[in-house]
Length: 110
Image (cartoon, rainbow, N blue to C red):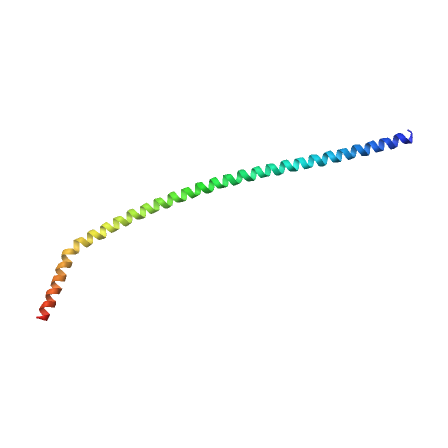
């Protein structure tokens, strides 16, 4: 083979190798861009899902707190009614006691 043909083939092979490298780098950059885009989409979806879960947990917690609050208020109303009833039952006894103390105080002064 003549020497000019060999040099031409070497140059063509070098150009072909350069083209292959450039194509591979372009393909690499494209895949990286796609991967970054996909990662951003996954991250956004995960954040949205986390926000949904947070909102659901918060709603459940509020519901539980409201239920406990209602139970406490119901118990407090029951306790109040019981105490009030007990106090009303003692009014006559207390009045008698106070009248008796008053009578003794008046008798001591007389």
